[in-house]
Length: 445
Image 1 (cartoon, rainbow, N blue to C red):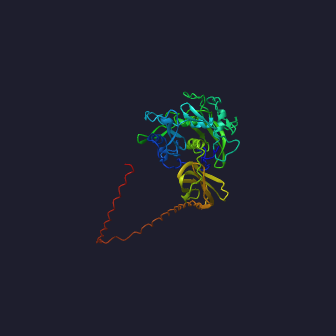
Image 2 (cartoon, rainbow, N blue to C red):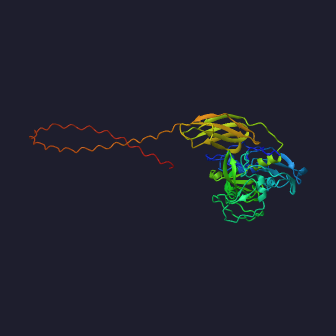
C-alpha cells in the first residue's frame, strides 16, 4: 500500500528557535456548502486574520466537494470536503441546518487506528491500519509511533486523576513508564465520556479554552469548542509520550487520539501553540486514496531576504500551490539549524532569530505540497548587520566654584558737594518682558 503521499503528519511546530506570534498564512478556502463555511469561519477566521494566537482547527482546503459512500445518505452517498485537520460532511441535507451537528466530521482517527472505513452509521469497510508516522515522512525509527501503533492500546485502562503521565509508546505499540511527565497529569475520566479513557490535563485545558470566534458576522469571545467534544470526539486512547523526528530533529511529544482527531503537546513550542491538532484530514485522505499520485513539486518564486538586523532576518517567498514553509540555515552549507512551520500556504514567511552580528549565513528554503512533493532552492547567503555600539554617555561638566567676592574698599571722605547740583539723567525705561506662554494641555484633557 502506498502510504507516503502526504506532506507531513502532525502539526508539530518544527522550529526549535522561532516563537510564532500567530499561525502561518494560508489561502482562504472555498467551500462546497455554506454550512461548511459557517463552521470553518467560526473557528478559523480569527486565526486567518491574525486576530488571535492559536493554531488552526480546520486549516487549508485539501479538496472541493466530494461524494463518498454513506448508506443512510441520499443515493447512498454524502457530501464531504477535506481540510488539513479534518473532514466536514453532511449526512442529511434535509436536516435542521441550525443543528450544531448538521455538519459532522466522521471518525477519522478511529478509522485509521482500527483499520476500517465508515460507510454508514453502522457500516464499515475493512482496511489496513495507517502506518503513517507522527513526524517526518522518513521517520522510520523504532521509537516513533504511527497511527497503527495505537491499535494495541485502545483498551488500556484510564490513568487515575492526578497521576503524572509518564507513559511512552514506540512504533510497535510497546509502552513503558520512562518518560519525563513535565508536570502533565491526568484529569481522569471526564463526566459524559463513555469510552472509559482519561484525558491529559494539557488537552482538557485546551478544550476548555475561550477566545475569539466568528459568529453572526463578527468576532466575539466565547468558548471555542462547543460542544466540548464536537471537534475531537471522545478519547479512544490514553495520552502517551513519544519520540518523533520533526524537520530532521528528534523531540518528545505527547500524543492522545480521540475519535475524530489526535492532539499533540510539544513543550518546547511557544505557549499558545504547544497544543495543536494533527493534520488528520490530510493523513486520512492520503491513507484512503493512495492511488492519487501528484508527482509535481511546488515552484518556489520571489524569494526575498528582508527585515535584516544584527540578530534576525525574515525570509519570504511564494509557491503556486499550498505547501509548507521550511528554512535550513547555518554559518556553512551544512545547515545546522531548521526553522519554519507545517501549515500549507502559498505565501511563506519565516523569521530567523538568535543570529550572530555581521555574519554570513548559508540557507535553503524548502516547501512540501499536500502529497509530499518537495521543492528546494539552491544554496543562498545572507549577512546580518553589524552590532551597533551603544553610545557612551556624555559626562556632565563639573560646576566651577563661584569666586568669593572681594571686600569693597572703604570710600574716602569727599568734599562737600557744590550747592548747585547737576541735574540727574532720567533712566531709560526697561523694555517690557514678553509674557510666558501658557502651558500646553496634558494629553487626554
